[in-house]
Length: 286
Image 1 (cartoon, helix red, strand yellow):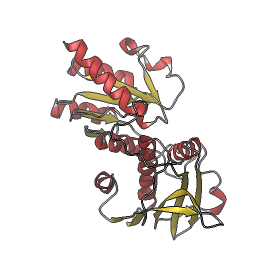
Image 2 (image 1 turned 135 degrees about the horizontal axis):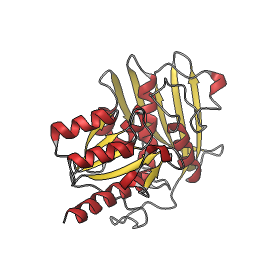
Image 3 (image 1 turned 90 degrees about the vertical axis):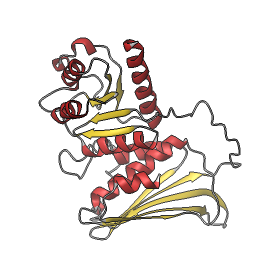
Image 4 (image 1 turned 180 degrees about the vertical axis):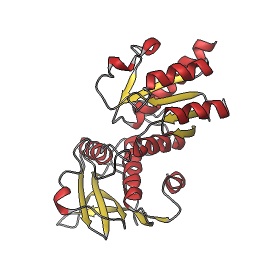
């Protein structure tokens, strides 16, 4: 993941990885672990507006008797830090300390959900003006995985170089989604809004799939899909939304009843929907 993470953060941020001195194998879905690290890296980057250092460290976790039953993953930054009275709230869905348009507050909530569902724990230490460390501990696997064949239940669908355009007005969601798609075999172009997405289609033309948010200012994702499809009838379309049911005022037209990935979504759900939409688009053209 390091090459993609280094592109995801800025050049004025140093990225250091400190692996465990001994190999550790933990019980967690690999795609979920990627999502945890990506979300934490983006949060750390956003906290370091003037540059700094991002450190990702892995170690075994010793209990009071010196035994190792868990492993720890710690993501630290040298950013602005979080005020003490807010630490208990940062894992709440939609709670964010970021400016409008720079985050929905789903990043740490998603991380916390994944970690707890995997039998792990998460803790946050922060000091204003010094930085923040997010530490998660996960149970060790009883034995190392030796098979080269992945569990079909957890197998992630990879792309084959298809060009996806991700249109999302929330920067953190857009960048996380783009990073996850890039790490799994897709070429990705990001658009911060519908007009930029349409300009990408006009200027490049060679886009295989448009993945768009549904509810955006000035133009809904459904209207964007209509206009994009008129420009390129072979374009595959996929939708995502942070709302349970997109408003009827969005005028879905031909997209009524279309599957929408609900935020926050897992990496497996994202890759499955993108792969399915690409395949459906190819079948429609043929």
